[in-house]
Image 1 (tube, rainbow, N blue to C red):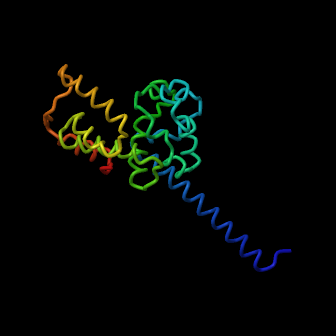
Image 2: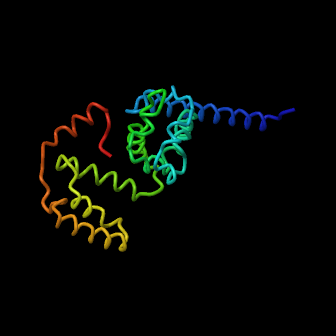
Length: 200
């Protein structure tokens, strides 16, 4: 027999569960509207994406698991995972997917969402993403030296020395220029408008 206090506690738990389910449904709806998320509900969990992923060894969840977690509405776990940052966008998973899920594009959308909602475990990865975008947005293309300078504050000393030696060799061979050449950058804005994305 429930007393009044027990009944109120049970009702509160029911409300929390319902709110949680609503929150989960909202996350799935958000992902379906993102670039790359349009076919996320079509996933049949065949594992083709995970089986061919060349960077899965560095991921905390496989691509297949991320899709399942999205379908379960596990927003915080997905947006704070390493997987969305480790994806190299090689499109191996997308070309093998029998349901045409555009996983690499979805990973990029999830990165932007993770930055906006401040759900990032390792800020170095998000800083690289942000600085890369800033350089491309300013010059219309990647300029390695500008990106390297922006990354100095998040690079450890050993990595800095290695990259400096590598940069000198690339400059000598004419592979990297010291001066950034600028091209038309309006295409970046047009892409953002078409995908309805905000700058990270």
